[in-house]
Length: 194
Image 1: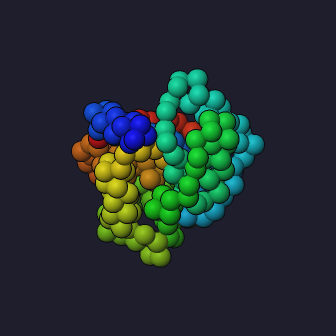
Image 2 (image 1 turned 135 degrees about the horizontal axis):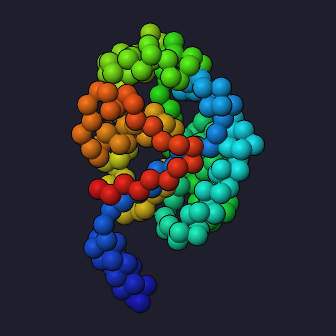
């Protein structure tokens, strides 16, 4: 009976607190250094990327960021970042398939700052010949965010810059130029409040 009362109190506390989550971009990869689009290509972290992930875990501890679970993209650059954070913080991690980076089709491994790619990101229905459109990506990420919003857990999402762009668009209005230009740094931590 006591456990039931505590559980009800915890549920009340959770219901009264604001709903939020944290987003962390993965650590540095070789293709980041070479200014190439990683997309759905599975690229490993550099030594610096591993160190960034370790420092991110330490920062989460130092800033007393609380979370129930880490959800991570299955791609190695994100899952290794999440593993480091999990090992340091003790927050359990789980693979979330919807967090996989967008498949940029013919733009995979091309220059990230290429003018053609920058313009192509503004065409929301384009699949880049063999990839995934921004609309398809937004559907899966918006669905995930809706699920998180309705869940009672606090999450840290570890994913990619393309995912960060979609997450940002969920929370604020962006024109095509702002959307195409948006990005965050490797291992940057952002909090989003619903």
